[in-house]
Structures are given as structure tokens and as C-alpha cells.
Amino acid sequence: MTFDPSSLKSYILIATAFSAAFIAALWLSLIFWTYRDIKKRTSDPLLRILAVLVVAALFLPGIIIYMVLRPPFSIEDEYQRTLEEEALLQSIEEKNTCPGCGRQIEENWLVCPGCHTRLKKVCHNCKSLISLSWDICPYCGSLTTIIQNDQYNNQTQDLYTNFTDPNAET
Image 1 (cartoon, one colour):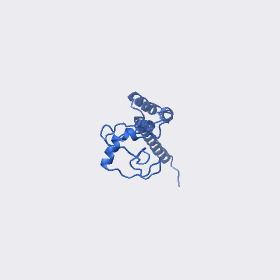
Image 2 (cartoon, rainbow, N blue to C red):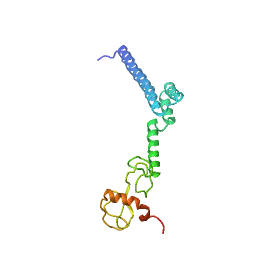
Image 3 (cartoon, rainbow, N blue to C red):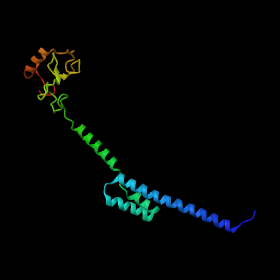
Image 4 (cartoon, rainbow, N blue to C red):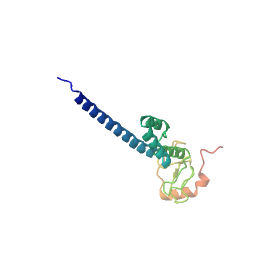
């Protein structure tokens, strides 16, 4: 095997061309990635242009600078975090609402004054208000029964005279 210096020169030229093409493709892909990433993180057009220009002008040091200075959260992440905070605050401040009309109601109401939806029932033994789904009174332990419509009407009329609020101080 003989060593030909002209073929070595052509191999070096081919390797240099492939290396230059790889570096150019890497440079363009980093510019494209930076644009897509900054687009997800901010809506400010000036900041988008500056981020892309830093990466285009400085290449690898530019991408490192961008990674250090870029906003930590995307717009979608910020929106999700804001929704979570609002949901948490709403659950903390949650008011009772009527299942029929959605208006705010008080805890000790028997019926909704807006749509007349039945909200609670009165224990026949201790006259305390209990949830419609409960079949036993938590205050006196007596079993409850479904009140018929005529008994329901009588109960709503006598509510203020017979009702004793278990939460009220005596």
C-alpha cells in the first residue's frame, strides 16, 4: 500500500465539509429550538427577537446564556399554576350553593329561597337539620324516614318554631 498525499488532502477536505455541514445544521437547529422555546415562555416580541439573536450571534455560548436567562416557566405552566391557585382559594372560600339554581345558601336553610329546592330535612326526634342523604340523625341517633309532601309542608311552616340550631350557643 502506498500513501498518496493527494488522497489524504481530499479525505481531509471531505471530513471538513461534513464537519462544517454538521456545525451549520447544529447552529440552525439551536436557533430554531430557541425560537420555539422562547415562544412558549413569553409573549413579548422584543424578548423573542433578542433571545434568537443571542443564540444566532454567539452559537454555543449564546445557548448557554439563553438557558441561564430564559423565563423559568412556560406560559402554559404559569396558566396552570394560576388555575390551581384559584381553585385552591375557591375551595378555601367555598360557599354553600343550591344544587337547583346555584345561588349561595346558608348552612342552616331548609329550602332555597330562590328555587324552593329542598336542602335539608328536620329530624323528627330532636328537630335538628340534617342532610337529605343521611338516614340517621348525628345529633340524637334516631333513624330518619322520608317525609311525605304534606308533612314536608307542615315542617316548613313550623320550621322557625320547632328548629333548634345545634351550633348555636346556649
